[in-house]
Length: 519
Image 1 (cartoon, helix red, strand yellow):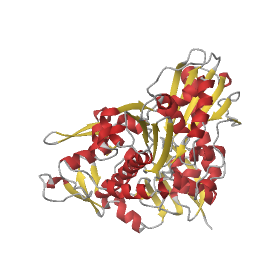
Image 2 (image 1 turned 90 degrees about the vertical axis):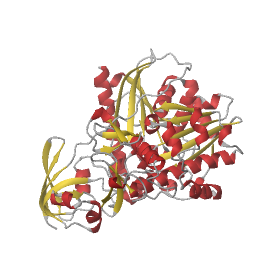
Image 3 (image 1 turned 135 degrees about the horizontal axis):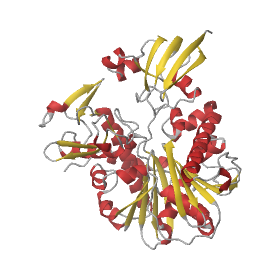
Image 4 (image 1 turned 180 degrees about the horizontal axis):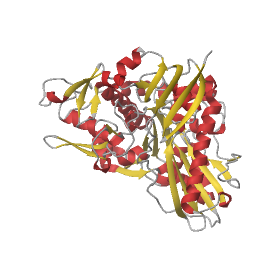
């Protein structure tokens, strides 16, 4: 097989690699250490891996013809996951942008241990990774850092990554997240002007799959029924981070295969397990994780929401960087707020929720999720994107019928999961006294818009308490309190996990929740 030379232009630099003819651009970029987003795992469905390429390349395939406009094809835009290199070529990628990743979280009082040195808390999210450096003697956060999870190039969700690990990419997945953490450790030390050997403890949290992939464990047990995690962590592990060579590393105890350590940490941060009240916690990220506290017991569940609510599965979805639509307001006309007030050229997660709520309020989308092309005063904003009708929100940003369906699937899964936990406990939504919303995405959404699209029962909106990145906050607390660390393991062990995939009630509720309620 012929060897090809490809020049890669990324982040303002250029390098040349040699690859075998027939290699996909996405595979070449990953092996070259160039980050690229593949939310659909390289199936050619999302169109997020756009690059500009020239030279000897495979012809445009049906997926590219569907997802790329004639103008994009004329400009040499290709989908990296569909394009093969057949000879010498050049490729140009957009610089990776992390956007406004949530690091801060609502903090509560707790009893800290007296310690010395510095500790690092790390929250390994499916989409983003956040870390904080803490002075253990003063209990003061000295620096924070964040990054996109590089495992996104293997797929946007845990299922995609489990499949890739089982197909032989487990070591590549492990190295990707490990290298990301090493870079965050280095960044924290530089910001706080501390040496790596001054870090005495690292507490890592994340969902069960993320922790399995980090530690290189076999994920087969997470891939099929009965979905029993053979390892649930909670004990010191040998990680050997160069950025913290003397640190004791602990991974938060997981409750089950799909209710992970990040939720254990979030429950600790909220204090919900210590209060005598009925409360509900929702972390509506790529995986919708839910915990119900009632009558001294904890019920937990996880549902595959997908990346749509964070903008990753949306046609013009993007991180919360300048130009991203973060608010959509209807006051007789459509008004957009963008990050930094820049001209709109895409939409982030909070904007997705607002857009959906406004399209429902104005009757542009009906209760089935159909984007109506006529019968309303805004037909001049209807356009076509590929084979999908779309609504023009701003000068450049459109919201497609496929986007609406993606949001519909995600909100139905989360809402049905909430109702299922309430059903298991014999409760109604109005009996919930406090509703905690955790995670980076949940910190930026408009609660009233989320209720309007049915992301959660409307009765919960007045009781909402936004926690911010509760998983990271909880990990910081566990760094500084042996008592809380012991409680966290006991809490995870006592939590009853509800398997939604085998629940007839969840299935029925999911179908009902697909519909939107109209004003």
